Length: 131
Length: 131
DNA sequence: AATAAAAATAGTAATTATTATCGTTTATAG
DNA sequence: CTATAAACGATAATAATTACTATTTTTATT
Image (cartoon, rainbow over all chains, first blue to last red; front, side, top):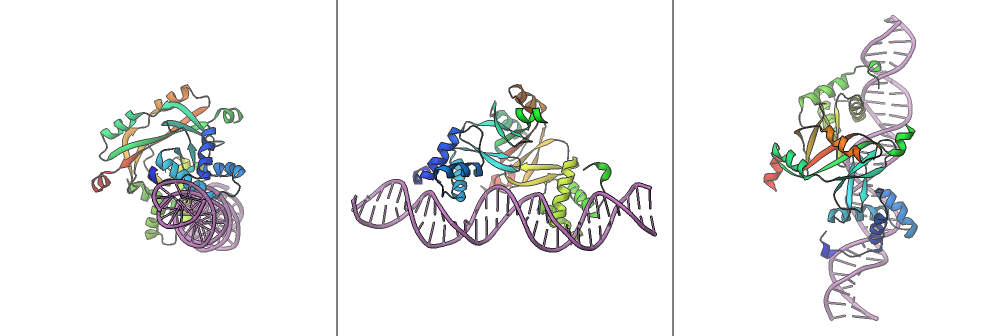
């Protein structure tokens, strides 16, 4: 996964380009469905492989969502997210990543804390009206 | 899932009793493997069903672990957890659940924030020595 | 431009974790 | 004691993801 040994591919370029146009943090399958419009025979495995590779390299963010399917974000600036328990949509929060949380947690913990994931849950604006 | 319409079962009692003896937050499969010693023909589906039911009722906690398999905790007092990126073990942190996080996040968010999940990652004491 | 090696691909199979189905068993209220 | 609904075991099905493999594509070097 070193940057030097990476070869470009039309498929990966399309995936990155697509993610950059979106602020709603698509899932692997959503990426797949979208890219198929442009590259009809792209394989779902290719999408998964590239999303894994890109997030491994830090070119995109993988957003774990409490047991539900992962979402992906082209905005690599560390920030927190919200997931709607009704429709499943994922939204950005303006809160920046708080390093103090890691420091505080480290105080009484014997191992090494490197980072944290923080996900807020509730109902999005639209679903809050409906329910 | 109302408490009034629940019938006791030997299997569920065994699952709860087992979880209460453990502080390492077993997974569904770990629970299954353990309970089989006592009830050899228990079904894995029964374990999943009861763990879902119990966590739904708030009798145990389901711990989502960033895309990895869920772990379960008989200590229902809200608290945060740590997962080791090397061995996958899950440990308690002494930090209590911080309601202010939800309040802060709500300030600039239009929907309704009800709760959050916060998981710390890094290397546990044992793995920190090895690596 | 031709070529060779590595990387990436499409298509498919396999895996993993979990949920659903269904006929049978069991708990419990009356 | 009995009726009813909950819970069960066994198995099948599903969903998401990963692995495999033969082929294609990229890219550095001639």
